[in-house]
Image (cartoon, rainbow, N blue to C red; front, side, top):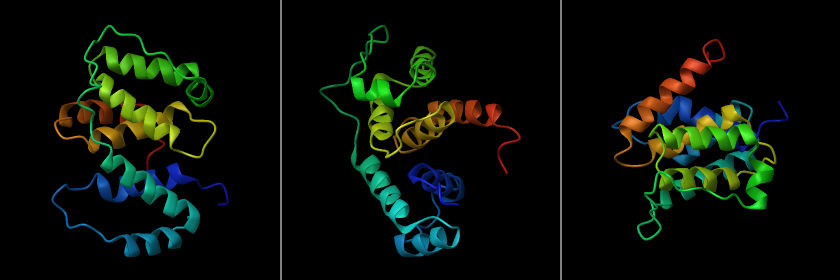
Length: 160
């Protein structure tokens, strides 16, 4: 498959490693790289995926910029509007309204979406990115579980 991209690599890693058991021993990057190459992912996309994950882990929730106003309005930059269609932006807004995403997590999700090479992001990809962001945030276990239900309820039949 020539069309494999960073998000495909991330989703593979997430489904096979990150979501398993938090206490499980860490698999090193070299052995993961070999496995990903054997699964058919290009080396360049694998490297970008690891960089993306490292940036996610190093991107702690901001303290000064924590906007806890649930009724605040998010204005998207032009580049964000190009990447996130109306459905994706509406979904982020919906998740914030029902309490799955706090404004800080929403900003982390948008940051990680913008860090991808892909010019077009669809709603299913946004859901997976949200799961990855919530999974990597301490104290977000309930939000993660609620989001996981949304993702897997919507994609029954798609998952293997």
